[in-house]
Length: 301
Image: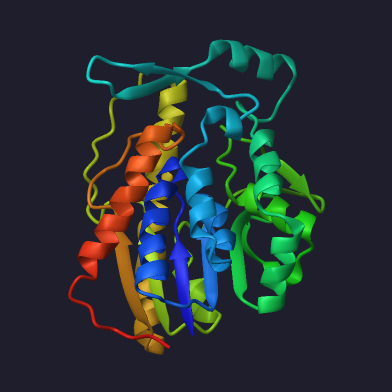
């Protein structure tokens, strides 16, 4: 069995889409298992449907308004055209007055998921019996859960995709089935081990960070930027741990792992959704996968 695993990474998911496009359309790889965390969960259903062009169009045309109905940041552009974020104090004040649990709200993302993944497409995926699985964090039970399309209704699966992508406290905290849920990346940023547990013997893993950390965090200017820096530190540690555990599990069970890291640091803050940048990253991902496989004559059944 073959699996495609896509890590979390916000807007950098466009790079993963480009890599997947090359692997599916040019290398003709056929996957039995699709595992996604956060932004990876937004990609995998469409990739499993072989609707790469559709998800490419979606990923390269969204901006913050398609994701957030309460965006907790302000975006400014410097003289070098680099984008930076700062606190949107009005949204912060509004959230405190309304006693919200999070700084921002991402209800628009849930609407977008429902619009772009139809119930008919969902039923096709269930009939195909492919294992499409998204990662969520159950904060009430303090555990990671993997939600399979085969065990869910259409509405529930759309909810799980949305929940997997909710990077709290900047996005919505969701209560479902009596529990509080958030982004799967808080516990399983790269779910390699779960793909192995499901029987995968060859796994292509797309990781939306460089293999060696190239980033030095800027000094925290306020409590908000400190929180952002802490989140990055935490998720980076989780990602490295997931990779180490996945490699050990692969060695023990004779599984082949093929890693696709970003060749450079794409962006400091992955909650900025810039259409031009995301189109560029998609193309970059495609070209990177192409360069990695130029001398590959591998044939997979």
